[in-house]
Image (cartoon, rainbow, N blue to C red; front, top):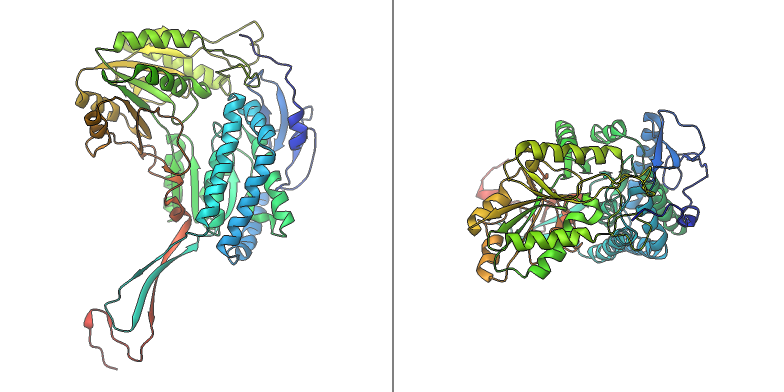
Length: 521
């Protein structure tokens, strides 16, 4: 079905992200030019995947502006770290309330600028709200430990302190939620945050920063607690090479993560890396196929295959392979593809032409390796699709060892393969360089437990009877191997944003030395 190109775009003006120009680079202040304005190498073009039209141009941050942002962030940090943690949590609570008030409009902006359907856009904003709620509770649980000292009349304990300005680099596919996963936890820990969003989704960052700025202003807090810088690779390198930034949290491709990790490690800084996924679902002959089909279709076709947790490989027991294949083809045949702003749409466009071309190249590589496209894969043209990058999600026959299957293609391509024994299926699941999310569908408790054991999935996320997408904020999110090893969001991931300090207090009148050493002066 053709996309609707005449949707109500009033949410842009309500969020203040079109047709205005406000100088400056710090929180809530961005150079944002009307879509009709001139474009030069120092500006980013925000275009909508709906029809390829220009929404606005955003000024890229130069080095002098970046240094100004960092200086303001350092000044803000000296204030923010002295604010009691529960009070910091109260500020985060207010940010959550502001996001609730703007959920509809911000969700539509995410859909319009990135291309995911509106319900997914609003769901992404809900993730921001949820992590705010989580962080409020965390602000009262930044626990240290007390340990027994081996010396009499001594107390030994550890505590946690804020790190300082934290750099957060996010990808286009989750243009607001991943920032919140990092920023809200970092904020309650006492850090300040400098955000470098994807150059493909600059307006989402502008809108979020303006929402946050209102909360800071109401509470008479410095705007440098949350800052944004805009631009491409060069601006990201400002953060990764800067000794003033103790932690860089980066979400994106494996290639990008290698560069960031190498650069930050070279200056002995910290990184939190969330990189590519090549996620598989194992479907046992003991699975509930109704559950499995629902999870597979959402996991593989949702967000047009542009999630790091997208289901890319389907490892199916030979006894149910043909039935599941036919059910998936029927389900894919009924997917409504169109404008992400249309509430009837299930699959929106890819983010840009580069992504559509990468999908076609991947399918060509698959055929050359000996694989087969069973359904879909074509670029949709005409009938109102002009200007957008709409594709039909593809179902393919493949082998795990094909070079293209070993890679992550950020598009809706699902590779099907058979297995006979569970050990074989687990080996296939683990037989890629990435290790983010994984799943098994089975009603056999022994199979489920084997999948979750140390000999089972080697991924950071392993699910039973639920797909690879849809992680909850209460659990730490991240993966192993080339996925980077980082953890964001829930559990004890707050520790990544703080520095640990061990303290010993001598409350006696003598000075016994450790390990019973005698040392007279």
